[in-house]
Structures are given as C-alpha cells and as structure tokens.
Image (cartoon, rainbow, N blue to C red; front, top):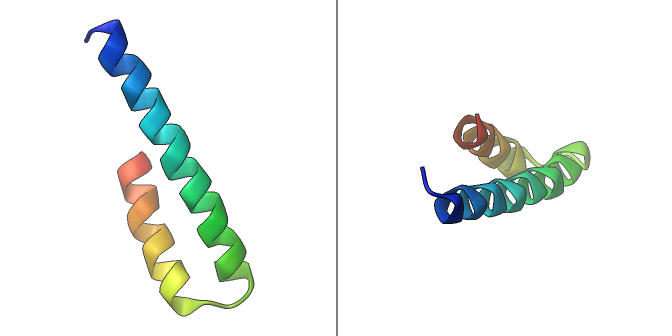
Length: 46
C-alpha cells in the first residue's frame, strides 16, 4: 500500500469516526434511525 492511499484511508476513517460520534449523540437523545445508521457505520470502520 502506498503512503498516499494510507493517508487517504486514515482521513476517511477519521471522517467515519466523527460521523459515528455525531450519531452516538443522536442515539443518546433517543433516535432509532441514528441507532441503525451507527450500527452500519461501525461495521465499516472495523
């Protein structure tokens, strides 16, 4: 894997984690839709 693609991958993961964090807040507020999205997102992050 080239350094450039590694950097891009790290950047994407950061974005995904930020989104997951945002969704976590919505889930905490009681959003069922956010809960489903968060589960999907967590699968992608792993």
